[in-house]
Length: 71
Image (cartoon, rainbow, N blue to C red):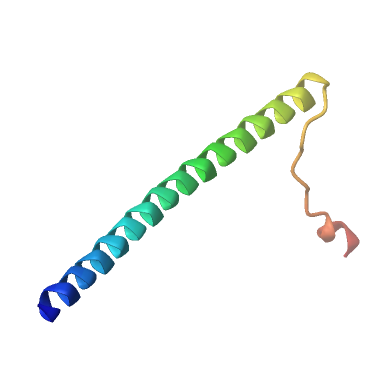
């Protein structure tokens, strides 16, 4: 009879481990979705700022290497 009790306890522990693992997996998936959403929002904001800068007539121009003029 003692074996049956310990087996039941072991089964409950395994069930709890599995439930905890599933909960962690769902949390991981939700965090990954949140991360993607945050990155998408930042990208949208970046594009909006770039569009605003261009609309105001300012632009980002590449820097030229003028070190050759110093020789």
